[in-house]
Each structure stands twice: as structure tokens, then as C-alpha cells.
Image 1 (cartoon, rainbow, N blue to C red):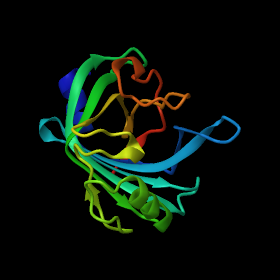
Image 2 (tube, rainbow, N blue to C red):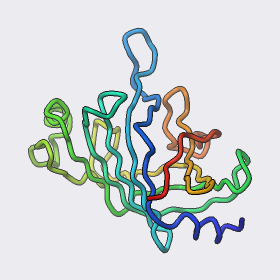
Image 3 (cartoon, rainbow, N blue to C red):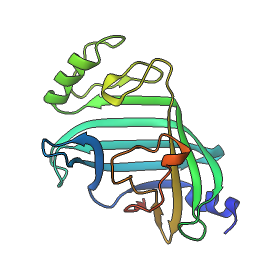
Length: 188
């Protein structure tokens, strides 16, 4: 497929099949990486725009939602990736919106301790923008625009992104761009 065909096929809405597990950057007492559970809803929009909603969970079955993130911005197509035919390197830049909504009181309390400066008092179920703000829980500094160096691969009505690095590193540089595919999202 050509890049234009891939982009056309990617247009629309996608969601997680089930709760997904990823390695996080945080470690357990024994040094192993803590698991990170989430569900995604992604929309690839005309003119290379996107919206991504992520809900993080405290458990593998998705019964205890912790936080909802909403990111909006642009997709930059960076060329072929060798993992599979028609896989494309893409950069996601959340330069339009990055919102955080605590969904459980423990996380709300954490935000009220770690993310006080520049924010209203955090309340469970109420979102606040963290775009270009200092946000210690995610390691964001003043003026930062969240960007990930990722992949997109389409197969039937499934969209695959890159699998998280097993050591918990994010996709924050070209060198950290993934080299494997993760569980797909399905078209909705």
C-alpha cells in the first residue's frame, strides 16, 4: 500500500480489544517493573489530526479505573519501518490538548500532593489541562509538548502500534522508537 492508502485506511475510530498490559517505568520492591494496565480509544482524523483517550486501571481486568487521559494533536508520517510490510513510523504530537481526569480518590489525593502548582484543587471525575504545564507525575516540564515516536501497522480491521520497550522506556526519542508490535485496536 502507498502512504496515501494507509492514511485513508487508518481514518476513523479504533479501540482496545481488552485491557492491555505494558511495562511501566516504575519498579516493584524486588526491582521488577510494575505492570501498567490501560484501554485506548483512538481517532485518526482528516488532515493528520488525532484524538486519543486512555484509561489506566489498577487491575488487569479493568475494574478499578485510576485516571483518564485525553490527548489531541497531529500525526507526522515518517516513512517505512522494517517490522512488517506497510508499517509506518509515526510521531504523535499532543499540541492541541492533554487533559487528565482522576477517577479514584487515591489518585486525586496524589495529584493534590504532586501537582498543585498551576492547577485548581484536583477533584475525582473533573479534568484539567496539563498542556505545556509542569506535571511532576508524568515528568513534564513547563512548555513541554508530549510527543511519542511510534509505529502504525494496519491488518484487516486492526490497527497495531509499537510494543512498549520491555525496560519501561517511553517512546520519547527516535532511538526509543519501538521495534515490535503490540496488541491491536479494532475499528469501531
